[in-house]
Length: 92
Image 1 (spheres, rainbow, N blue to C red):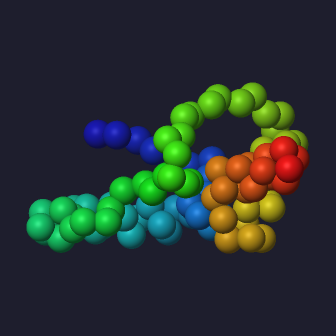
Image 2: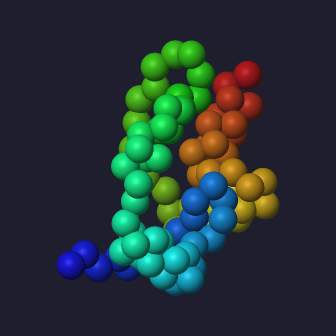
Image 3: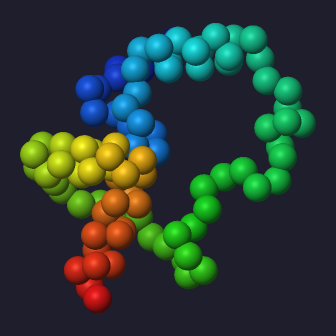
């Protein structure tokens, strides 16, 4: 059995996750999935542009991460989207 520990800052697309989300997802998984529905084209993570991308680990303080998460929630975006947008502004 896998145990998932939910931190108080976990988000998906800027939405703060709750134990309620986990409960709903567990119930859905226990009911089972229709394999053909999961194989629909268009699923998966799209790249941020036409060029290949690369994961770059960055160390942030708790305060910095909290500020990014708050910004992401307000904009209904992910951490990555916010960080890419901020970097693009800085580099212009």
